[in-house]
Image (cartoon, rainbow, N blue to C red; front, side, top):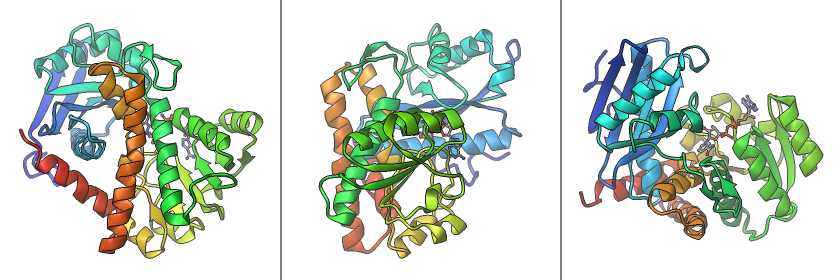
Length: 353
Ligand code: NAD
């Protein structure tokens, strides 16, 4: 296994490996860049097939957080951590406490939040041994409802704001009344996004692998049920992937009938080149790491003085960032993902240390 010459290394500032034989903890923390502030990112627990696979994942995810936080104009760097193991089999309080001690050793260089395989409750257990965990405090939510630290409402609102910006740019419309939207994945983010869209007058199609999630959207929001095979390919104004990554690939891009792809799912492009493929088809791709930054914005404010109104205003600024990306993309004749990456690099590479 290589580190410095790893294809995903990309000049990471810091990579730590941690092993605690008593609890079985094996974890890696990657800190990509801290020029804008301490690295904040999720702690993922996953049964990686090899150490190499875990390293690859943490490096890729950590780098992504640098770009996401820079584009969200947060004073945060990018980092991520992974615990190697099956959360359903290997997650114990002792293991999570050991992870808390590992986090503490880095003295705040990296701050952990929940991710797949970990929950707010798990982060609280880690927090017995460190202050460097985030998204764990009960507080007033930005939407006026009490929050337990779950960033999903802010992510959903940011995605809604991003759809508004995309619709304005691509379709020249300021209202969403009658807009047609297909949402893949009606989970924590997807359902709330559907609520915002319904309130704005949009007509919805939904698909989720879990029937009860679909039924809820159909019964409570009047959405139309779609199937696994057609949700991405309906002739709608917007397709919103809100489930898993890599849904935009060679096959799917050719079949899309929409003009806008704008959803919360992470890593929607199967490969970086699919940004160009969407551009060539005249489809406006809203870069996922820009539109889904509401959650990290929410978590940032938890640590830097909870202020629901400031969170809302900051999440709404996702729309302005996207307008800048769309405008530059049109004037430079380059795809939106590429422009978003360049804009992020301008922000973190030139930030004062
Ligand atoms: P979630 O697990 O609550 O919801 C995901 C939903 O997608 C589930 O209902 C699941 O049944 C469904 N699903 C899974 N595979 C599917 C498939 N093949 N087709 C259709 N539906 C499928 O997760 P979430 O918190 O709503 O996050 C959704 C996406 O947004 C994820 O990619 C996540 O990484 C990303 N994201 C979430 C946040 C956040 O604040 N929660 C922040 C940034 C990005």
